[in-house]
Length: 70
Image (cartoon, rainbow, N blue to C red; front, side):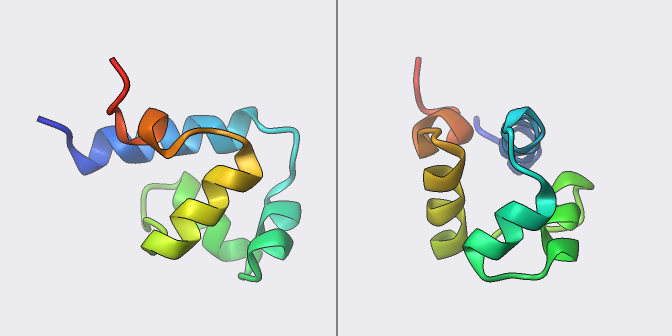
């Protein structure tokens, strides 16, 4: 079973591993930098459209984040 906690962990990992600052990610998504910070601190998960755009910005497959690749 895939859990939200696992998805959030992988997403946080990709954000931290990116060469982009939280501010740069936020600017590209058109959101507040504090929102990106919340993605890293487990408080919040992005809306589906934001998640899809975030995957594009991070150059990572949504399947990888969702744990669907085996």
